Amino acid sequence: MRKHSHQTETSLTKEIKYLLYKPRDYREDTPSPLLIFLHGAGE
Image (cartoon, rainbow, N blue to C red; front, side, top):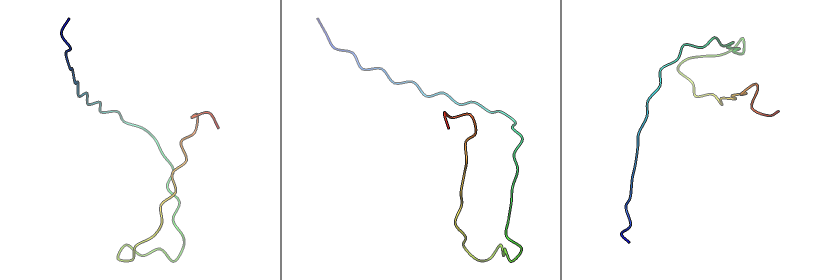
């Protein structure tokens, strides 16, 4: 019996709606932490 290795790469493009909240003092030129909440992921 011979061993075989297989690999598959898949790409999916999907349009999703999201809400983005930024602090009042947010500046694009200053690094900021990012928090992502994936609703429906067993929370």
